[in-house]
Image 1: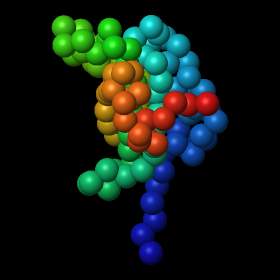
Image 2 (image 1 turned 90 degrees about the horizontal axis):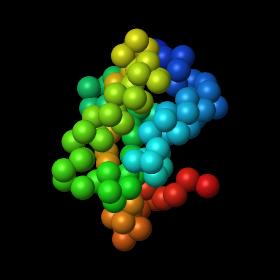
Image 3 (image 1 turned 90 degrees about the vertical axis):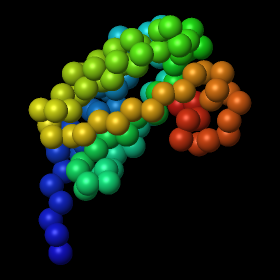
Image 4 (image 1 turned 45 degrees about the horizontal axis):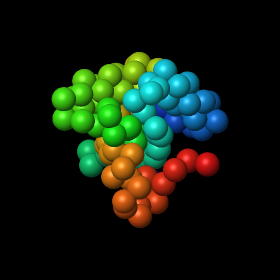
Length: 110
């Protein structure tokens, strides 16, 4: 049996959810919703996988790179992913794109 060490930040889900909610508020109005899953990446590292819904305006080609970098850095800083030994992965979709698809991983958070 192999022992798996999971960083403390990922074991306290209510605290993690609150930190993500705080970051989401800081990222308004560009971010509509943030979903996340905790798991292991292909190399076996403890990771957090984000699906981030952006406004259509923030998703425009002229602004997308800046917005995506800002969102990723804000979340990584808020959660202190590097300091906690957690790899963070980010996927982005526009609000209108999410409205067109039927994917539970991107469904609106209640």
